[in-house]
Amino acid sequence: MKKILITGGAGFIGSHVVRRFVNNYPDYMIVNLDKLTYAGNLANLTDIEDKPNYRFVKADITEASVINELFNKENFDAVIHLAAESHVDRSIADPTAFVMTNVIGTVNLLNAAREYWKGSYDKKRFYHVSTDEVYGALGETGMFTESTSYDPHSPYSASKAASDHFVRAYHDTYGLDIVVSNCSNNYGSHHFPEKLIPLAINNIKNAQPVPVYGKGENVRDWLWVEDHARAIDVIFHQAKTGQTYNIGGHNEWKNIDLIHLLCKIMDNKLGRTEGESAKLITFVTDRAGHDLRYAIDSTKLQNELNWVPSLQFEEGLEKTVEWYLENEGWLSDVTSGNYQAYYENQYEGR
Ligand code: NAD
Ligand code: DAU
Image 1 (cartoon, rainbow, N blue to C red):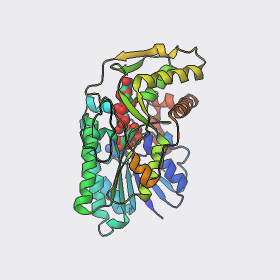
Image 2: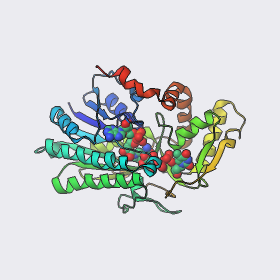
Image 3: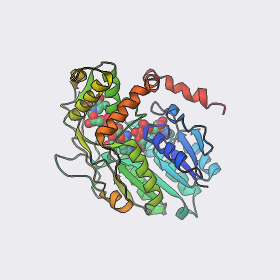
């Protein structure tokens, strides 16, 4: 049996990774460690929470003694590290939490792995999940490859870049088995409605203004979250030690074009006349230091590990809209803050 620590498993991408590993690998024990910040929601995992190969631990990766104690007790075979502060706008408002969780938290996990895995580094694996934002911003052309120099601009991307460097430094210096992946923008179910797509879905549904930063000309490369989880699975199991893989959808959209497509889908699903939802689009002050364009070249992952995205964006976006409309309870619990009681109701005292 493999015992795998997945950090940040109550968040958006983490919950998809946890679900995939729990369902696909019944011989693995999956331990989901999460602090349950505003972004952590155990209701994301109701379908697997009672499986015998799943366990939840509420903990904060910035607390080194807690992490060390857990490693001492559990004898993990691997870590898949997703826990992070993830929202760029929040990092602009208050960078400190990003340094604490994304940098110090990652170093705490690395230190625990280094200490408790001593003598067996070749049998253990530390997988660090990162972002394409570490590469900075592109102009109208070009793509990020694994050899693009780091050039982060926001406090969020600076903190993720620092964590990537620490992970690689522990490989080069101490010989820890590490892999890193840098992924583009994810979308899909269970996405916290502060990020563009779920925020726009929620606002369109409620006939509220849809804020588009600047002129909406910034470009993002969108990937179906379950394709990201599958990429993590493939890389975790097949990548050689020390490797980095870029993960992306080859699916670039200007924000304003994406919002128009979303409005069209929502008009259709909500029985509104075409063009009604688009009236909600409201151009607002641009994000400070807003990166113009991201585009990921994931040729290495496709050629070496045979991974390709599975869904066309139009299909994925429609499925995403359907999920939010069918899961009104999830959305209203998140927007009202009720979801934070889920832990007390379901887990405390277990
Ligand atoms: P998210 O904000 O939805 O989830 C983050 C999770 O980490 C939450 O459950 C939160 O409670 C937990 N967490 C935060 N601080 C913690 C701490 N100190 N200790 C323990 N747990 C803590 O984020 P996400 O969008 O799912 O992103 C997950 C990872 O993937 C992050 O590392 C992010 O940088 C990376 N990433 C995200 C995207 C994207 O499009 N969302 C793209 C590429 C990479
Ligand atoms: O590229 C990967 C990154 O994608 C991840 O590392 C981050 O964790 C994730 O949050 C995401 O970052 P972005 O800043 O690209 O995502 P966000 O959804 O916040 O914004 C997407 C684009 O939409 C961006 O150009 C800013 C713009 N935007 C965003 C919001 C929230 C708006 O125009 N209006 C909005 O209200």
